[in-house]
Image 1: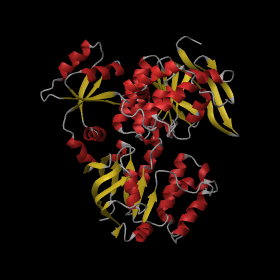
Image 2: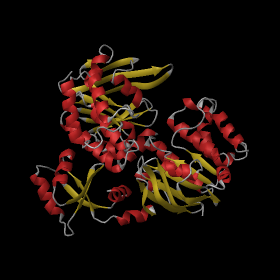
Image 3: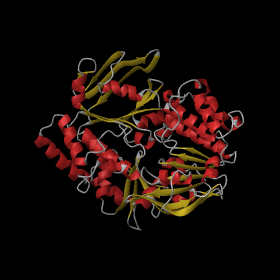
Length: 300
Length: 242
């Protein structure tokens, strides 16, 4: 077992950040913590990287106890915090050298591990880290977190605020690292990234709502979901919200995801209702639940 | 300026030294439109937006916002627009009520008007429980909804939203977009940037910036047809890295 968390709780003054959290991550697994800002993800990362004590419960990382063996954990994990935490006034190369030296290694020794990522920022190796673009900062932070060849890598919201192209590239990098045997715990508020993990935990308000593979988690959605579209989105949302039989109404890109309270729901009834509301070009078709649907259902 | 056009941009350019951040962009935005302004990090979105809200002078080109020229009348622009930054910009150590009063005052509203607006906001957003709480103690979703409302206090003609929903939970994200729809429906123009491609679908029209230029501009439906894909995410991926 690479990470084991048993009944971890943590409060700050009167605010509970984590409530009795338990889960395990297998060796070599890419495990996702999926939840919004304020769910408790960062607190959990700080406990597992031995920067914070839990109020109760136990945790092991790379088979070391988070309290008694904290020094061993620090030597064996890489941590990329959500906030950019490298030295802004050191250059790219200086930052990397600094982290290698701290961990008693050299860039050359583990260059293989970071090569794919580092070559993308190498043209800027003499630029100060503070002057890099968001995407480049993120790549440098990943290199620095990897330079001592950690067994477990913690990534706290590595893609928040990052554009879709850079997000895709970042996940491709993580997938390549996984083939090198590194266990990863990664958090994200983007539900579409959840599908790229081996297993995910949905987390909100300090509690885990569900743990499963992304493929299984969507099967837990209790209702049939319909894609509904019409000529006027705003009016469509309002009309659906006012429909007495609605179970859930959520805008989803070009459609509204609609589910109905009734077991014998007939889409034709809904179409008639929407036509009465002066909507046109009404389309209703069945669709599969996504992780985001499941999350919203569980978080209700 | 045509009656219903609230933003006109012609060949707008901004250079920093020998780096061209915004390269000769042109577009128009209509009254009540939800205009999505997309692009990769570093594509020039924020630089362009700063010129449109009157806080950065263009190197060349022309732009009129809410009927005012960006060179000659930047202060009139500021009075007629709302702006919500991607970085939370209300005062953490003031309460919700104090923030509303403060920003109402900044925008020159009368005490009576501020009071009226505050009651309206409390009612619409359901703030009764938290109106006397410090803003810093609120969850991000609440902060963002309040920021948006504060940006609308002075009934601006246009509101600029810079990544308003980053990191916000999926339910709040949707509530936020319902607020956007409502605001646009009432005639305020929305100019919004986002990295969530499902949100791009909610816009009436979307522009995509690549390396300082606008490489595509159309309705989400037409863009998907043009790039022969089924999602805006694929449109973005095809464009943004060539």
